[in-house]
Structures are given as structure tokens and as C-alpha cells.
Image (cartoon, rainbow, N blue to C red; front, side):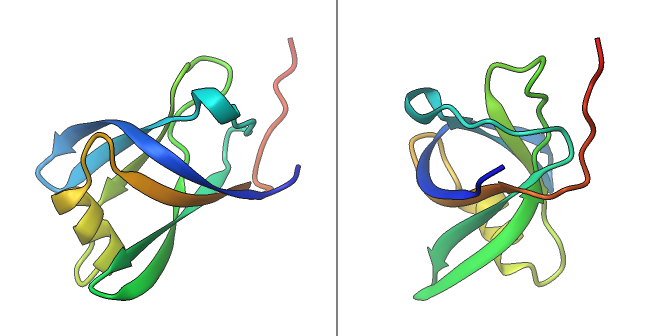
Length: 108
């Protein structure tokens, strides 16, 4: 599976807990094919520096219509803290992926 770098608009942000959010992406115009177990690398300029971190995809390509990642703040986590505290619907993130080979093929 090829990896692509693209800009994706945030469709929705759901506050799961005080320290965790789920970011839903609007990929309707560039449908992203992925497998369970894969991840994305998100990149954002924060305080003048480009910061990139990987996050597992938390949705299923077989069940969910909207692609998402869930992010939890970690101590001194530049990206996770920024995203949990500041990301909003309509924001745009640079997204690379999907990546990862720890996947499974479902048999019907």
C-alpha cells in the first residue's frame, strides 16, 4: 500500500475525557484506503517549529464512514498537548500515511 502526504480538514473533534480527543477527518474528496492496525503521521507547525507524531487510526475501514484518530495528552507532549488543547473543527493538518504492517485481512 502506498503512503501519501496530504492536507486534511478536521470534520469534528470529540472530547473523550479531560485529556483525550478524537479527531474526525473530512476525506470525502480524497478517499483514504487503510487497514485496521495502521497509523498516520500528523504534522503541525507549533511555536514556529514543524512537529510530527504518529497516531493509530481508531476507526474501521469496514464499519466507519469517517476516518479518525484518538489522541491523549502525555507529559511534555508537544503535539498531543497542542492538539487536545487547540485543534478545532475546520482546522487543517498535514497527514502522512496510512503506514504500518501490523494489520490483518478479514475473511468473510
